[in-house]
Image (cartoon, rainbow, N blue to C red; front, side, top):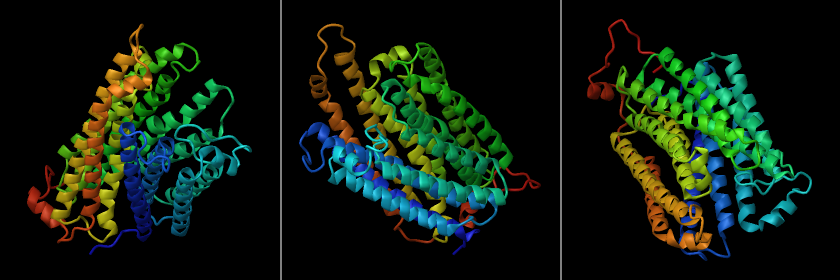
Amino acid sequence: MITLKYKTQAVAKYYFIAALLLFTGQILFGLGLGLQYLVGDFLFPYIPFNQARMVHTNLLIVWLLFGFMGAAYYMVPEESETELHSPKLALALFWIFLVAGALTIVGYLAVPYAKLAELTGNDLLQTMGREFLEQPLPTKVGIVIVALGFLYNISMTVLKGRKTAISLVLLMGLWGLALMFLFSFVNPHNLVRDKMYWWFVVHLWVEGVWELILGSLLAFVLIKTTGVDREVIDKWLYVIIAFALMTGILGTGHHFYFIGLPGYWTWIGSIFSALEPIPFFMMTVFAFNMVQRRRREHPNQAAVLWAVGTSVMGFLGAGLWGFIHTLSPVNYYTHGTQVTAAHGHLAFYGAYVLVVITLISYAMPLLRGRIANSQRAQSTEMWSFWIMTVSMGVMVLALTGAGILQVWLQRMPTEGAMSFMATQDQLRFFYWVRLAGGVGFLLGLVTYLASFFIGGEPVTQADADARGGGLLRAQPAQRVRDL
């Protein structure tokens, strides 16, 4: 048994467990949605499509936020070399956030949305009715309160301890996340301004400040698992986030193409959106470079696999699949089709789902008193990575095929274009394949959860050194840092 270097890191376990449970709920609702594409009255009238979709997307956001918060509570004490400022506040905010999220989901399912808006004071400040931001006013206010308490806790911890590039980039991303969410309270009657402010939340989260969080989490795990000098990883991190912010902020313009804003956004959006794959490609090179330069084999090879998988799948989903329909002449036809859904699923999975699981995979064994799980448990965990990743690939290829056919039948013809519903009927084969991929993904997730319950002797550093031949590529005078 090993003990945590900083005992207050233990609060992260609550957040990780909640994140995985909510992740499971999200996938179950996603499967229900996939069936509703094929069997229109599935679960109707108990859980109609609009309610299921709200729950599916809101669970995605909430469980990722739980994951980010848990990661911060684990990382920041170690990076700052000091105990968390207030573990009691962290636990209190956990329960507040969990209960508020659960009540919101119950509200979505139990009450018609218009009635929910009436009951929760939407007439006082109209914030509801926008995709991904459907939360009632009390929930939005609760999210702000939880975020401020969380940021106070993390910021005070950083201020009283060591300042590192990783903790400062993480803090910048978390503060940006909270500040951008404030635009969810701005809901002007002018539809153009409404969509513009809406994208300030949605785009500047996932293609802006969340990328800072992604970079810092990935850098932390790679430092711990490869032993590469912190200075080397810091330089990579600075370059990656600089490109991510430059392309991500101006790349918001690809959402401004056809909503009534000036035409110059078609140029700005096209150019800088086309550059957005660069930081993700750099992240891929960064991860492989660090693993190749590793100075020793880390006992937790499952965490290394998740880390490398994050960089590769993030590049494919957020980078390549984003690029294929980001130029304005292409986006004119593909916007809102299943091509968008393909990009969205692979980007979220590759960039954010995988990085949260990377951190959980690295930290949970340590939170449970071991440096790494048993070889059998790690093997099961690695299988889960491949099952989920291949299944997501099946889903994304099916959605891409559906999107291309949708554009061909519905969007491109100048005469005789099919109606929306007639087109959807032609896409059923792709929807069946997508559903099969979703079932496979659920199987992969269950396999991952099962790995937590597999016993056996934990892998030690001595076992890993024996397997890897001891220190790798290290000169006698070199020091292995930050392991």
